[in-house]
Image 1 (tube, helix red, strand yellow):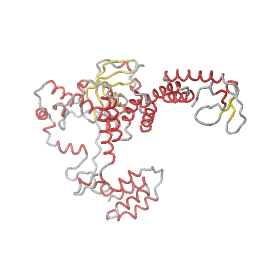
Image 2 (cartoon, rainbow, N blue to C red):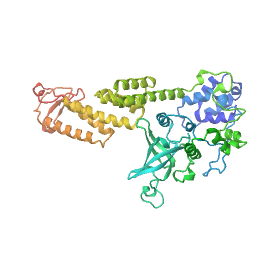
Image 3 (cartoon, one colour):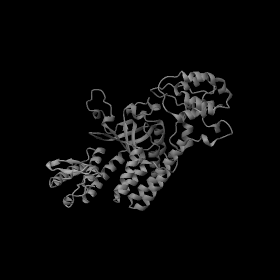
Image 4 (cartoon, rainbow, N blue to C red):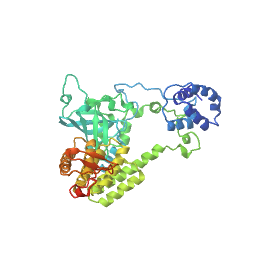
Length: 471
């Protein structure tokens, strides 16, 4: 095993990793040779150590592979700002161009696969004072998709547009019809909305070298240009386009692609032992993969539920949402969708519970915040009708803590505050010299606070008929 690499790893992770290595690599003779030296390295380590038990467990189990002396990593490729003129390998249009894939399925797959940090290309179709809208043409980083026929729009907010030159207004540099290359800033898969950014920081680390902003027709991705040609000529086949590519005839294309992805054609590096030996252990399956699969199936149920909801089939929609949460109990989209359905049916308490669970899993979820704020206001109005004013006031304040600019919550809080003040002024003095509470002289009228419950409860039968229930 590579002694230096092991020492560096232990210097960072410390003694806890060494203990795991001793358990996992007991029968590895290479590890037993270096373990005594590694013990010294561990105790000499300094600095703050992060608690990463899952990472340490992975390293310990795979140490014989990770620290194998013959392990080779691909040399870092120098990123060139300009693409190489020659085509080292055949760049083809997406396979779906040559297949019969429905519009709905392609649209669904795009929102499923699109991630923050990806690069997209679009054409400006509208400019407003707060930003501009793009009609998306294709993806230009990571996945290769041509999506012009899906008629998808994306918003680039003015704060996501860097200032250019002497232009005080960033938008003055752009015109309708400009072709823009941008990074994906945010995706709302539930509402099917995409926001993009022209700041390089919005890109994933592997795509940081790509320039964002206005591009020319010649700078459009090659796969998109070839897709346009294939779409315009129905006689074009995948084989014909492939054979016409210069990269297809490159005799070194296999070596080039292997070098590009950093693998060897004789000793392929892999963390999966099943690809290195005949034995394949179930423990080598990643929990994260199963979680992603569950999230995918749950989201599929949510989409089916939304379709039922739009057509007024509320029972079927609820069944789909419940099925999604059985598959993935913490699925945020399913919780938000079910909460919205509960609120529509007037079950405000159940709706609030679902929205709160969604925010626990994703505190910045925009729709969860928005719907929770609206539901709290509606529940507050419901309590006002039951004369539970203090509880309703608390709900309005909580709604404003989520969205302090909500006009409906502001107006409701203002009205109920005035109502409570007027009611308190009508209450006669109530004397109760006992323990367990405190005197309140609000509005010039002393009255007794029992210190019990969530609201103010007046401890006098003589005024119970004049004061609404506050709980």
